[in-house]
Structures are given as C-alpha cells and as structure tokens.
Amino acid sequence: MSKKNSPPPLGTLQVAAMKRLNQVVSAWMLGITARALRDLPDVPRNRDGSYNARELVKWARSKAVLDVAGSTNLPGSEIASIIDHAGRQGEVGP
Image (cartoon, rainbow, N blue to C red):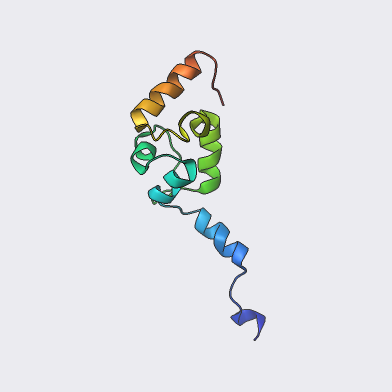
C-alpha cells in the first residue's frame, strides 16, 4: 500500500476530533452538565458552535470551573455566581 492511500495517523485524527467537540462531550470532559456548560458566560466556541478541547480546558482552568464545579453538576448560573464571588474575593483569576 502506497503512502498516498494510507489513512492519517490515529493521533492526527484524534487531534482533529478534539478541535470540534459537541456540547455533551465538552461538558462531560469538564465534569459538568451540558446545560451548565451552555449557561456559563464567555465559554470559547468555534464559529460553528463546537468546542476546541484545548481552548475549553484553558478557559476552564482560568475560571476554576474544574475545581469549583467539577464534581457538583450545579446549574451554570450557580457556577457563574460562585466563580464571580471567588473572583471578587481574589480567590480566582486568570
């Protein structure tokens, strides 16, 4: 089999998939509900509405979503309120 007919390496396919995650997969990755993810402010999205895993994790770490909400499944509005409060207290920051 020639190299032209070979499928792309698995890693290349996985990276491509991680650049275009849907809401359910993105929420699962963060340990929150899809509704909570949808309701969070300023979540980075691709132009088509999908999520880039790298950008999403970077954003979540800057907002402490993984620490604050990772295991609680709180509604997005409650998560945003917790993050805002923590930010005002100087506990969370980019």
